[in-house]
Length: 239
Ligand SMILES: [Zn+2]
Ligand SMILES: [Zn+2]
Image 1 (cartoon, rainbow, N blue to C red):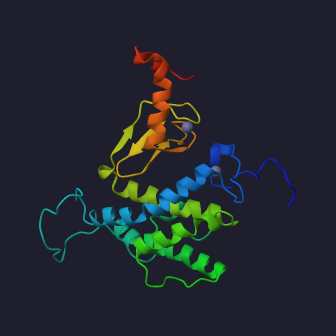
Image 2 (tube, rainbow, N blue to C red):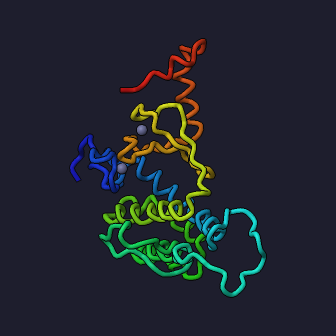
Image 3 (cartoon, rainbow, N blue to C red):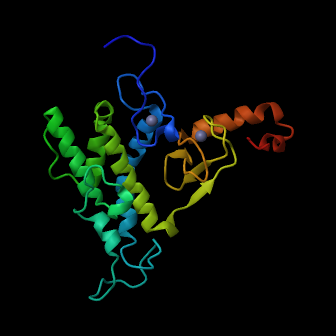
């Protein structure tokens, strides 16, 4: 490989909204896409627990109103299809067109592929919690594989679908501080998640970067520092 001072561009889906960042050393994806994949794999056991609480229509996520699952109790098939083995995407499909994906099956497929490529024992009996932990241990390696963009897309779709199916329970908070990377006020914090995300949806126009709480606080402190007397001034609109 010729020695250059620039790495190839990240192949993560929609990386940089059309202007991909540089891939991290020895991988095909940038740090933001790596962090995102990490988060999306890490959160799958949480998604399972949460969907489990929304199997019947109108369930608010807390304790069930009536105890037993009697015959005739309506269940949400879309939620069930994410919880049980079943639908996984056919490569290249647009996830919006195929409906909710099975969380266990999606993780199993990727674990199987990785085990196969690396000559490892496939964790056949693993549940979602174990699969998630197993996959996290192999993400560094996976980040250098040509199919990593598909893995990012599929695993990311699980989180989007789960949040879409039971949106009433998602607590999303818009933060006032700007993004460290693009400067836009597009940061959102989703309850229960480790990272604050710069909202890259078209309407918002953020850059998709992910920050820990500490990084966010530090950035805000840096900005506020010189103006501590009148913090309101910091709020001037970016562009
Ligand atoms: Zn990227
Ligand atoms: Zn940003």
